[in-house]
Length: 147
Image 1 (cartoon, one colour):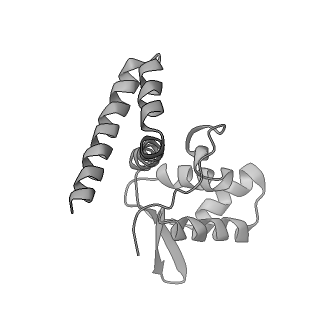
Image 2: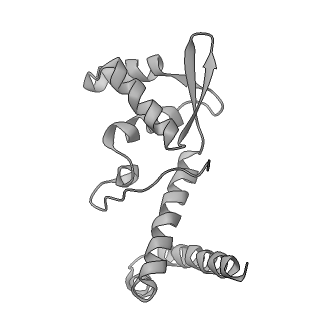
């Protein structure tokens, strides 16, 4: 079993982390990331905040958090009678992983167009950061082929 987050959907028209997570999943992850590092979160704590915002059912919050754990975004520990959830990645780590995954897919399937797209970006600092990621992807793929 891999600990890599399951990021299999990409919606370019959605904002931020909603490009790869559903609205409720993204909202729950934002709540969990807002807590102090190392402090777990119960379904009840998440539910109480969500209920104020969008009147979701407790079971909806619970099922969504279970799904996030199955996607390896959360880990769960049983404490007394409650399940406590912890993020497997910080928000910056998560964003870096999904950006890397998308860049790798673009690079592998459309390397020329991906590099041309970087050249056309108005923000050259962002383009330079993307080039560094693409160089790392290319090095890793070459090393995998040599094995």
